[in-house]
Amino acid sequence: MEKRSGKAENIAITSLENNLEEKPPVVEDEPANLRALCVRFGWKCLKSLVFVVCVALFFQQTAEFYILYKTYPTATNIMVTYPKFLKTPAITVCNRNLINKTEFCVLNDEYCMKPRNIERLCERHPNVCMGNISEITIPMLGYHTMESGYLNPYTRGLGQKFLFDTDPKKSYPFETPFREWKTTYVYDMNMNSHARCHSENLHIFSEEELQNTTFRSVAELHYSTANSLYELQMVKISTLKIKMMEEKESFYLWADSQVYLSIHSPVVPSNPFMHGKPLRTGYIYDVYVRLEEEHLLPPPYPTNCVDYDTIWRKNNKTGPRSQEMCRELCHREYYKSFLYCETSMTMYENPHHICTQSRYHIVPDTSKEALHLCLKMQRKLLPSDLSRMRTEIKVNIFVQDRSVTVVSHKPLYGEGIPIKDMPCDKMNWEMFSYVGGLMGCWLGISVWAFIGIIERNYTRALQLMKKFRDKKSKV
Image 1 (cartoon, one colour):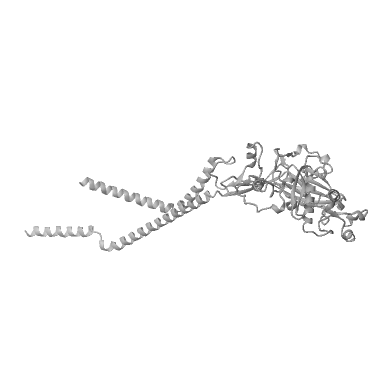
Image 2: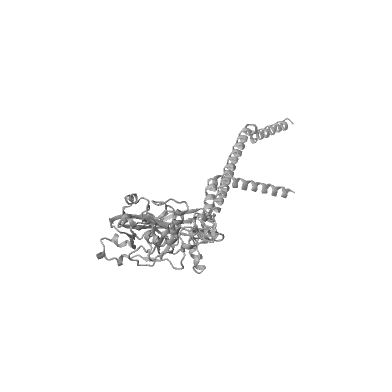
């Protein structure tokens, strides 16, 4: 009996020792497990925060891009081209004092008189006092004549009528006209009257096509007729010899017989007194033209242009051919509706339809009715005086070289409506690449956080599925 009890005690002691060895020290590992849980939780929060911030920034910039995209922004490109054909500009020449004093006084002798002080007149204007000074008569404009608040404007109006009624061919200012020039009338603000102008290649009212000049190629150049290749590349547009009226025949004695020159687009009216260059009698001018073009985009882009040339052709070559003419025609129709005359025009074809100054009204704002021309052509002048003559002005107009500076506006991100220069697939790829770039930027920064979150969630899902299967199998 004693032997059995001793053996039982040995077995119990051995079993107890084994149990003590197999059980881990639970009490000592609890702080470490708690710290590990805190680290894992903090790391997961940091990853989630980075991911949420990146996604929020992605959506924010995508929304900003969409708002910018809906404003249809454009990019400006500048390049230099060498076209085969030159779009010939228009040339307008105006003389501010074309009324012949002697002829006016013959037809309106009651509005002319002898000067009040002929000695003082001859002292100021010696050219008027040539010949027999006792027979000198001048218009009654209040200058060296009697003053009259009614007579002076009336005499000025008669002078305007005399200019309008005179045959334009009689006052043709060019000695050797080699092309047909069109006659227009332009308002001179300094003289407070309209002056007669002559224009070449002007097509603001006509149904004619624009003129082009062909550039010579290098193979066609002949060095025997010029000093250098540079001179051969220049194209002479026109040569003008302008005859000047004798100073003693000036209607406005206080104003010189001044000529103004303007080189502009054939389809855009121009006022040489405001945008041209004054020419002095007795000089030869060499004018070098630099060509520039600006290509605009149609609505909804901010340039807001209209292809007037296409519309003009669809309307059987009638109507305005530029934005400026569209506005002026709107003004003209507005005034004609109640004044029955024309005003607010830069160039008038028929001077007898011009409204008198006393009937002018405020010009309505019709800028919204006329859109920009899709192609703007500009000419920059570089005059140079060469020599002097006495009775005429000579002007040589050149295109210095065949290069044309082209300023074009292109869609910044492609556009919502197709245009001929940009296919639809290119527009879609541009927008897709921009959005894809934003996505790659922000989501790429958070890839490490994104992958970690997916891995954790995937592992957690597998554990939950395993527990669910175990519970289901026990049941």
